[in-house]
Image 1 (spheres, rainbow, N blue to C red):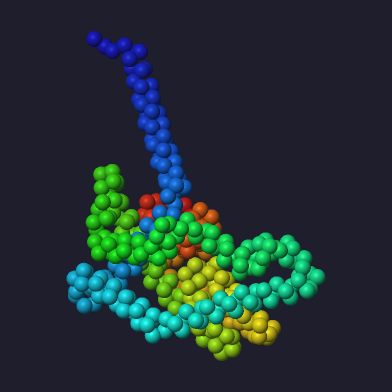
Image 2: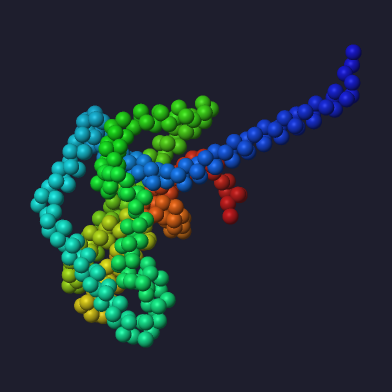
Length: 362
């Protein structure tokens, strides 16, 4: 018995309807996953920053232990213990021998900056154009509501409230990051395998590749950024000492720490030095401005290409926009961690998306 034409005609329609149902179901799943991720970021964004900071610290410890184990043939646990004890010994030694001097330097630096900011505001108020400038500047930049450092410190403190304002406070948060980082670094496969179990079976190979790529990228970024910070801090501090700017050591350390945040950090590190140089005169201020311009030119055109040859290369526009995005979502911690987080996301995207053919490139 031959099948009727109506049955033959209904088969393609049934297949088409089934494909449409599968497509709609896939879109709904993706939408729900995206909505769940956005809701989690909104609800527990501060916790996510702590988790990422712990993972970044673990990457540093694991990377140092891996280098030590490779050169000494020690087991990973022993190498990690030596690295941890070495870092602890360095901190204790610096704190014991120079802790009071460092604290005094930064205390004097803070007082000098507040005094100089108030003096600069007074000079602007005595100048007609300066009064107009103060009137229209926002409070965060030293406008009519208060001095720049008072308003800036208030703003930073407010943005960090969610990150540090737990029952433990700042020290408790740092302790959580350190302890969690130590546990992550001691047995990274335990936690990585736990995450992989949540990945569907057919995607686990790709998931493993993505996780390894993200960890390697974070280690390369941290290593490169540490070298970059050290060079910027040494050059800035030595140059300020030659110019005769007071508290050159503290300003050099501040420039190194601020350089952890690419591009924006360079401006943040230069402003205090320029404010202190104003108390010495316009000649010294111009010399300090030239010093920071030369240091940043050297860092951007000599150091950065050398570091990126062996580390991570991120497009400048992506770096700045990521700092704006994560800083707006997570506040000051998001601004600090924007660059390593973006580097990890770029590594993940590079593994998950196909490469462009030569004919497809623009």
